[in-house]
Image 1 (cartoon, helix red, strand yellow):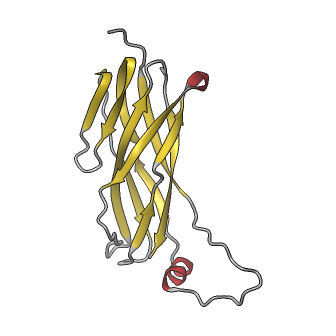
Image 2 (cartoon, helix red, strand yellow):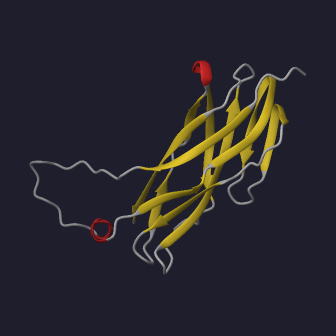
Image 3 (cartoon, one colour):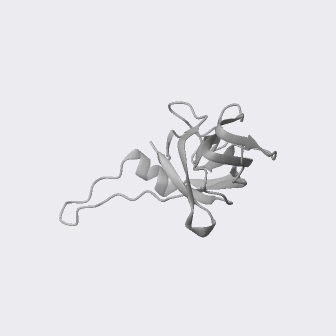
Length: 170
């Protein structure tokens, strides 16, 4: 097996503000509970740990690296060899109104960029959040996330990118 790729992928979380379209001809709506919470205590999103797939070598057939958000375990499949390094789940802290229910939205996939115009795709982004996450009594919610990195055989390099995340009050 000829190895072609060395990868140290790092992904960062970025908070994106929620934006709602507003009719300029309509009467202004009364603020709902979520908008009132956002006005009183805006949500803050901080990256504690970035998602890191570790270092791998990929042969001509390409492969995949998956990091589980619950266990933190890394699984390799396809024409992939582990070159060491630590795979880490991403960890995010959200701060806001104590006890408030929130919604976390992540994209279905994200493209990472490497050198020489090459790219790799992260799919299956998932968190360890419950179905209805809430901020704790201290106004904090900490969660982890993982995903699957898909790499083609000829795409060697160090891939990086940002995962946009929206956190909103419910």
